[in-house]
Length: 111
Image (cartoon, rainbow, N blue to C red; front, side, top):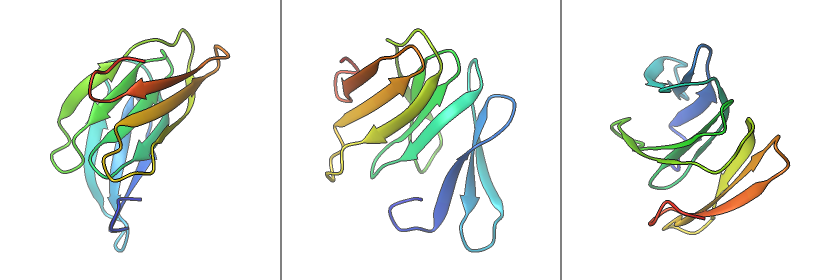
């Protein structure tokens, strides 16, 4: 859910994540991945994260849907991702089927 619970982020088919209107169920936006299927997603205060089957993690602007950056470090599909619960959400953790978990600094885009 978005912070105000008005929208929902979900995994779609064919390499996309979908943003839905929580009340009407209408599709608001598609986030198209440059490569790979989306296997994990999370909505934070200031950023959306999507994880792919290739291990790539992408950061998106929640309002415009523009791609903000990428996190590379996993060798296998992403199984989950989470953002720090603070308002700034400067940290994220991603887990992969390659048996690794990485804590990321979202300001530097590095572990």
